[in-house]
Structures are given as C-alpha cells and as structure tokens.
Image (cartoon, helix red, strand yellow):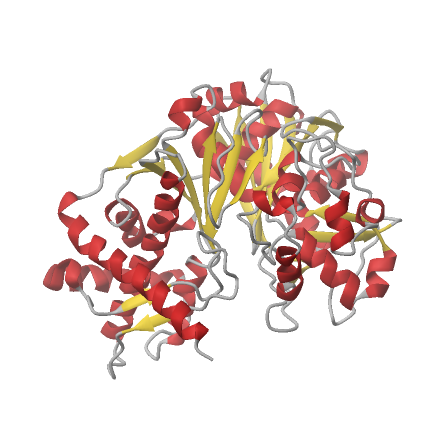
Length: 525
C-alpha cells in the first residue's frame, strides 16, 4: 500500500509516492505562477496551482512505477496563502488589477501591514497565541484588507480557504478545515470551546467572516479522513476514487512532522529537538506537552501537528531569498542561479583557508530585509549592513555573502535562546529544505548556533510529513503518532566545533547590539 504526498510551495508544486515505511519511490515537481502587481503584493492563480499539482502527481506516479490502484491515500501541505472563491466555486479576484484568475494572496504578501497593526492594537487575547503581535502573513489582516480595499470581491466571496484546505476541498469535495491551518493562521483557539472568538472579529470588523467564508464551527484534526477523491479529481490526478483524502497541514508543519514526528511517543525527549524548515524563508518548530509561549513566536498551538501536543513557531521572513537578493544587489553578483551560488560558496571556502573564521570579521549584517518575524515580531524592521568598503570585486561579494550566512545562523540562535529562556531545553536542530544544499549554512547552524545538527538522509522531510498524514487518513495506521513512528527517516548528525564558538559568540554580541542601535536610530525624531 502506498500514499501520495503533495507539497505546494511558493514557486512550485511537488508530489511524492511513498510506501508505508516512509520510503520515497517517485517524485516530481511543476512550477506555479506568481503575480506581483505592486510592491508588497503577491498573488497566485489557484487553478494554475491545481493544474501544477495534477501534473506533479501524475509524473510522480509514473516515476514510481506504482499502479494507481495501490495509492490508498493522499494529503496536501501548502503555504499559508489565502484563496477566495464565490458561492458557485468560481474564482474571485484579490488583485488590484481586477483579474479573476489572481484569487490567492500569497503568504509572503505584506499589503496588510496597517491591518495587522490594527489587530495588534486591539489587545485581544488571541494575540497571546501569536507572540503578542499580528503578522501581515496571517489570514485575518489579509481578509480585513480585502473587505476594505476590494469590497466588490468581498461581497462576491462565498468561500474563504487557507490554500491547504482549498486543495483538500478540490480533491474530496469536503469543505471541512484543518486544525493546523485554522489554529495557526486564522486565530482559531483549538484548545477552547468555542474555538472562534467572535468578539475579536467584531473588533476588527469581520463579523461576517465565518458565514461569508463557510468556515466550520470546529476544525478537523490533522490526518482526519475527509472521504475519497471525487470522480473528477481522481481523473485529474491520475488516481482512483478509492483513494482517501486526509486533512492537511501548512508546509512548515509538514516538515516538523517529517523530522520530529518520530519523537511523538516521547514528549519529554521531544522538547530537546527543534525543527528548522529552511528555504526561501525559515521556520522553526518546537513541540511540548505543555503550553509554552515565547516572545515574538507564533503559538503555542494545540494539536496543530501532533494530537495532544503544543507547537510553537518562530522564523525568519527571508533567508534563501536574502542570499539571492545579496547576489543581485552586488555589482559582481548577477543572476542568483544555483551555479552562481555554488561558485560563490567555493570561493568562500578558498578565502576561509587563507583567513579562517575571521574572514570579513568587521563586516556585520542584520538579516531583517523583510522584517523580523522572531523573536522581535517586528514586520517593520529593516536590514542593516555595516562595514562596507569601496571594493566591488567578486571577492567582496563573497565576503558579504559569507557574513550574510553568519547573520542568518545568528538569527536562529536568537530564536533558540529565546525559546530556551521560556522553558525549552533545545540542543538538537533538525534541518530540512533548500538550505541543506548550502554547506556554509549547514556548518554555521552547528557552529554559530551551538547545536547538534541533524540532516535527514532522504532530505524530503516536508513530503515525508505529509505522507504520514496521508497514511493516517487512509487507515494504514491507527493514528498519526503511529504513522510517524513507522515512517520515520533517520539523518546524519554534525556536532558543533568548540574552537569556532568564541568567534561566533563575539559576532552574536555584535548582532544583539546592532538590534539595539537600529531601534535607537528609529526612535530619533
């Protein structure tokens, strides 16, 4: 028996066919389009996303050699993007261009900064589960923006979905929503009854949101069986109508399940481990058996990944995208292709042989070019580069790239130390995503953060986590914890280098001081 896992990221849809032991038998990927009509606006076409999903699933199935009849279940993870549909299921524009095809506000879209600030100013207790600050990446401010700036689209809306829930609806016909999506991004309090806090929505003038969006009173747990594929979706995907659809998760939470799910039956041990899902941006996930909040963190969320377990999320709004930006920004950079990144990394390794860890030691970076998600929870924060010279050579680009990598790792240390100050005992970092292909970052996550780093051997933790969810919904295992234990994949460990600690500890002290200095500069009137 096999399952199909689908991961919809910022730029592509990936699919994998996985057996009941967690082994990946075939995978495929297909790009998705993005519209950027204005600064801070980013939009998807949900029909384009579904077409990409279908293409990826069909190709993965073909690559696996597994017959469609053997695929017992499917589930989806996706970015926390907002999909708007009308009462007939048709597309509703969320774009200032008015084009109907752009019906999805992408997770990284920051058009709703003002609305996010209004949510924060409300002082409502839902903010206690958001680190005290509403992010423009959440659903609520995006919905406020839509209602305020595109009232015709708001009035036309008949369904409001997180992208994961749209995909499970498209596959199964069910409009049930996942406990992961609603709890993490829609201010739903899964540990309370009722979960929706209507007085909060009244404060932000979204009193009609639940009815307008066909949102249920209670969310369904992760891995809940929503029913079989519809006849049309089975044809679209190249699967059968006996394939069951499971409630999905946000992509980062799928990654957390993929690397931490194996500890589901050891709640105390679980609190020593941190998941880092790192690509365009970086998300960190910490799980615990008790409710633990931390400044600037999202959560704790109850049952958003594993049943009965609380999970807290922190992160950096841009990391991989920041390294791309540094390459474009520099006169010697050019197009940030994988080949260009490799050439830069190789030259840094050569320069390090000559200068050691003191390479560009007076060059310091604050990586908040798209705000600081954690632990400062400041979407208005700006990036800083200190220590520039007139050197515009390729080597100067390499030095800046290296020190930007250092700053990204120091940002993770900042989050980790904040978590541990709030009761966690994290000493092991499980890394998955695009950063595993960057040897500089993988080295720094051990040496600059001071953690044992574990990299999954298969490096498909996001698809692995979604496969665990699919296997649960298909009934291959009695519950999600059992599926995680049976399908767990092992990884390679890297211990931190004690000799590197003094250099990076000094950098961290500079890093913290730069945050203080930026705040002082911003305060000058």
